[in-house]
Length: 464
Image (cartoon, rainbow, N blue to C red; front, side, top):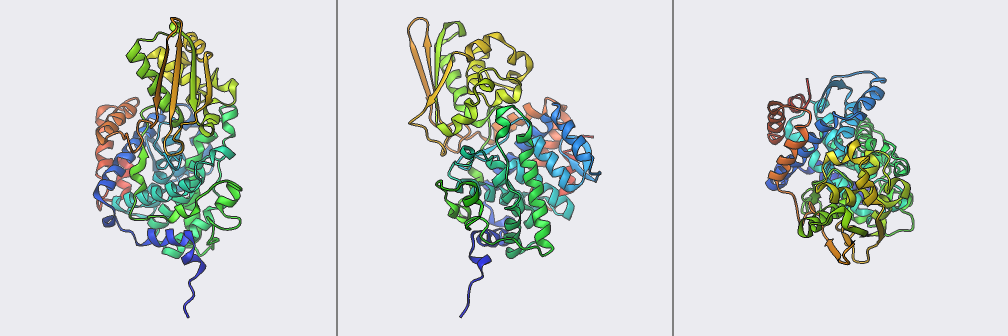
């Protein structure tokens, strides 16, 4: 009689089998092409982040552990592979303008790409290896997030940090040549490292910026331990003290989603690219406000009151605590403020990175309009399948104007095209780099998938 091992029959074991056997030729061409464009978006954002203060602080902190030779995206500096993964995650996610897998409520590229890149450069792997590992990291991260059924935020965990660690372990394990058992072990190990608290919402602390880079570093570490023979619990997802039981005790979860439809449904294709540099939960409100402004010519002075409707889980993120949401203290508060999003969109007629700069935060017209916004629960929201939003403007002439965005732009049902992603890339990298540099980086990203060394790609994407 043959008895299946617990590792092989566990969810982590099923993921390990899939990741270990999958080759780049198994991934559909359209998935690979979309993956290149998601990487392009991420790399452009990493470059744009270098124009802000937080990367220098992160670099100073990481440099205290010693240097290395691994390139950093958009910067001339070099670090060890693990520290470079941390900083690259910070750079990609730091402006909160990076992609999000909607049902998973997870920023998938910000962890999977740094992990795959560091592992590939360290192993002397090709850009084909890098691209495949990135895709597999996204697939695992997305499924782990889906398994949480939209509940991680409600209990104070950032799913990007939690799910991203597992995807990063899978990506790093693939690059380093782990077999199915080893990739399962890496997931078991990284389960003890997957956490990220949402307490930053209370005071605008920078911890969220660190989450995906830390997840990437955790994945690299877990894969290395697994390669050395370290064991991890096979039932890290579904076990009595596994991920879902520990993080989401008593709530609806779907652990089986972790291994569902692997290789037949490509979750990467459901990843949404952001059209606005704000929390994804606010996007529908920016679009709804801009649509009413364009159709009716609303002026801020016309507005008596604004009522915004949102699902209570994302609503907590963008309307609590009130003092930070109705009067944002800095640009990071503003990104997560529904009232500010509505007010700035109406006053400025747009929402770009400029609407997060000091002059916008201090704009008395924007601040006064934000005070007129009230937030209520939306019984018709599609969350977590989509990030719905509805606004109602009550005007001084007695009119009440409403607009609903049931499915946010960028969602799989309303995706940004690859051409639109390239346009976004030109705008983000163009803030800090000249046209020749932007073209060099673009060409390097869109050529991913051949037998050239991943280190050449990394060098093309660094500044210097």
